[in-house]
Length: 249
Length: 223
Image 1: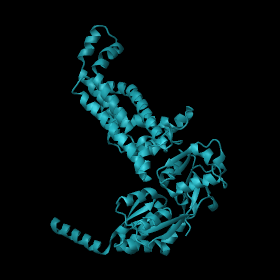
Image 2: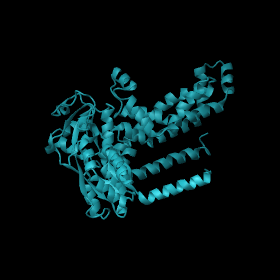
Image 3: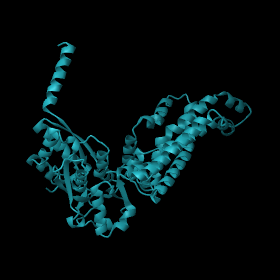
């Protein structure tokens, strides 16, 4: 085939694809990184649409959306931020729903370090405790709340190292630079099992429930792929993935 | 008004840049001297390694530092064995990262200055029975003074402007690792634009003044 004809064919193929399949730009809270990669793959297979994922701390993504970021769907790590966007007219009214309930966990990459009560927090030889930035990341705020309720905030505060988002907090612990850290259960769990190290799942009465809400943003209001993604998030296939990472539903 | 923590961040940044610059002048001078004088086949390799931070993304440097200085990394095991402890999340760790990151900005101006001096003044000094150390401090250093000034200014300014490496190995601890660039990032992320503006404007003015000094001096007195 001549190069010109073949390139015409490629153009034809590409354009015919895009008439059926749309792309949707999705802002995703960092704790939902791994499950969302799986869900997006399933979504692409089931619908032919493509989801382009950007990850970050919820507060940071909010700031980006307020400043004109081209996101069409937002999967936050709390309920407050999507509600605020809805009130401020940046999200489609009535499109908000809870897609997962997050679990906070104290984790160490060392297998013997964290016991079932989190006594490690009182140990003197712990030098660094990693958390996500409490100002922008709901899991970071939940960690501070937990420490406050345990009456340990004053002791732990000088030991805190703050990741820009929950992924960085996890990275500090995974590389062993922080002995322990507060991370999302979904980061250390696959198919109901802890992937490495030791952990203490924080009792739910120590921090306010992390209801993670999704919302269609105004920019995505007219994009059928945005609606399709939100529908897919509520499907049985997506729910199975979400549960396998330790989230409640 | 800027908050107390922002003053702390500014002071920390200046401390970090000052110490880094001093370390770099001590470490960078022999490297630059060797690079300027040697005919070794290692010259190309050493020159390339020194220049690497110019092209590498800070995330690459930050990632490698986090891993090698961590408890399982070779540097981390060495520092633990020496009784220093681990470097990530400490001021000392930031100095190590900054020295690597700003190295080319100090070594290259010095190397250029040394090369410009040439062999002749040293040969003359040798015939006057000056020892190599003598001739280095009494002949080379005065002749290379503009090179030292450029190196110091660039090393200092580049460390002040550092962000990615600090973000990755610093842990954002007030008065220890939260430098101005990280504090600004924090404010912007949290939509605290007023605080961000104060710090950002200060950085802009500072950086401009530093560069103004650097670029004006070539045309005037300093030489």
